Amino acid sequence: MSPSPSLTSPSTASARSARPWWALTVLALAQFLVVLDASIVNIALPVLGEQMHMDTAALAWVITAYVLAFGGLLLLGGRLADRFGHRRIFLVGIAGFVASSTLAGLSITSGMLLTARALQGASAALLAPAALALLTHVFPDRGERTRALGVWGAVAGIGSAAGVLLGGVLTATLGWQSVFFVNVPVGVLVLVALPLLVDRDTAGSTTRLDVPGAVTITAALVSIVGALSAAERLGFAHPLALGLAAVAVALGILFVVIERRTAEPLVPLTFFRSRTLRAGNIVMLLVGGATVALFFALSVYMQAVLGDDAFVTGISQLPLAGALVVVAGIAPTVMARIGARPTLIGSLVVLASGLIWLSAAPADASFAVHLLGPTLLVGVGLGGAFVTATHLAVDGVTESESGLAGGLVNTSQQIGGALGLAALSTLAAARTTDLLGAGAARPEALTGGFSWLFLAAAGVSLLAAVAASGARAERH
View (cartoon, rainbow, N blue to C red):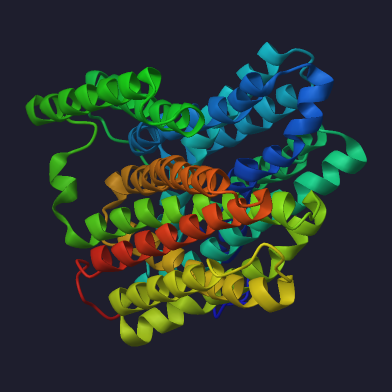
């Protein structure tokens, strides 16, 4: 799959591990859990709601509780890793993820479940940026690091597809509790193996933690994620969405003021002077928005319009995931030959092409005729875009700020996903309503709405390609 060396081959290039490819395997397993948990629970919601006696509003909080904690705490989690040690914070995060997953599976009340989901999100916010930072430490050589990021991107693709597939299989065979319990054995394996593979942290930073900045940016991120979640369910004009958005803007301005005046800021504003880092994060924000909206719409389209069940829908996304995995594996080689910027722009154009093709799918589509081709193109585009954008977002960052870089790129993806889902699903709903009002049958109206969503996602991808042109031109 990847041109990387064998996991069993020794390496002397690593600063933090004598067995870097084994260390990558363990770190990638942790990332797999984070990506998996973003989608696996969705499939279990109907059964969970019936057995836990939770209405639609309460079920929405099963997702929102996780997203708020995860998206809101990512920057702080990355900075805590820089301050107290990346390995240490990673292990705290994976231990918390295992414990909270166990609590979620054992939940007997909705309050217990929502508390566990919030703890899962908070734990993921600790481990995700620390894991990416550790990857950059384990692979200090630029070429090997790029190949490792290819594996990283492939694992993310597998996790995205596995969430839909495993969610349906586990819920049908073992019950909704199993979508949480599946995290436990993998998490325990990671918790045991990583200390054996990655050296202890060196002395952490002795600077004081910027508490006012940490509180302000965390509250701002929670507010913006909450605003986007409210907009998705209630509309952008709803007072709750508008109020939370206003709070987020005010807190964001206050955060910038605090960081300018603080001697030891949580996020040094000079961090954003790098054109490459800015481009990587902007692309991740935009691609995150297009991707989350795409997977949402494709799943609903196949079930509500084509009549497929959750299992068939999950299976049908395997070609997309397979293309993503393969391209993520070869993207580092392409980057080495033509540079990161052309690779990223080309990947985004391919992604947009697949989305435009997908928008032409009719209400009576055949998977082989109308969906297989465009979803393969989408997988190719996503595989190249995620790996390259992640590379740009962490390239050249010092070890003391690697946690911050990991937290920032994860935050960009999460905020982008929330924004894209809220905006593009609203667009699709408006188009569907217009078609229903014009007398169209429900399947055709839904198809028309999703067609607009796919076209808008293609536009977002092309906008990301324009942003990618701002990255520094270089070869690896």
